Length: 167
Image 1 (tube, rainbow, N blue to C red):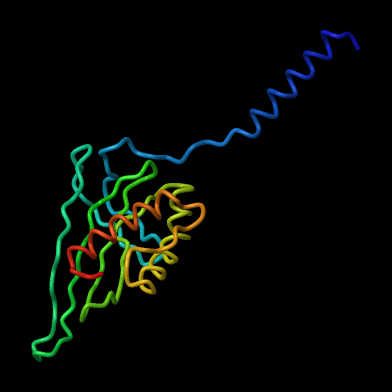
Image 2 (cartoon, rainbow, N blue to C red; image 1 turned 45 degrees about the vertical axis):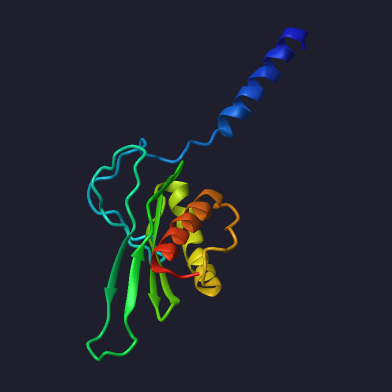
């Protein structure tokens, strides 16, 4: 085989290998936009709420609500929403439920969605929740393969815990 033919074969083979190994990125929205309509449940207890389109670079302020029985006991619990933390794969927001100074529940209000990002969120969400409940703080291990989501989760969690006066 002539040298030119061999070189052409090598280049064609290399191009074909690169083409077949190309992976398409997740479907993501530009920064500052949200999907219209209801987004599906994350499959991990996460509730994704529709929100108005935020101003780019802005985050929602943490909110706190208190609920309890009328029996006068100390069964009152406080729900505190952490701020929305934006990552390159989507927004993350958590809510903590505190009763008698202890974290009784952590709910992911928003986690990244989309193809791969949604799969990672479904995997990481329950692990991060369990870690937070065990630690009773935001000092939790990051989930391997979900570094951005884990970091944003701990940021939103820490802010919510600060608002609730825990830890």
